[in-house]
Length: 85
Image (cartoon, rainbow, N blue to C red; front, side, top):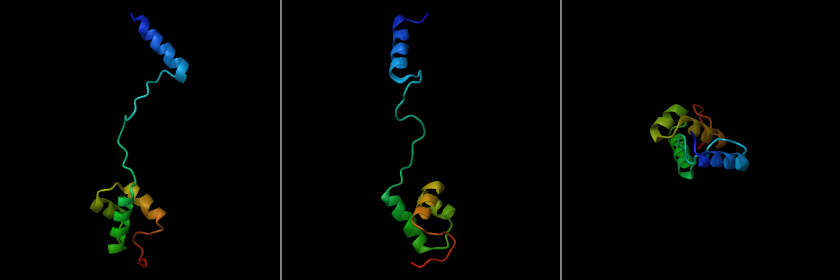
């Protein structure tokens, strides 16, 4: 049989958040933030070899492909295309 404090806690949570879900901060997979250092490494890798693919750059500098792809897109670069540096 649940205790009185259990029901009090549930009632308080419902009144405060309108939900029974428990908020767990810092739970889940850790996000990899897009730092200035990461952006510089991606741009530098593409300047060294403009015909390198996103997949290869990602593998070389140990940053996820999606992050590398976003950086490349935001910088206006095109992998596999010759670019003026």
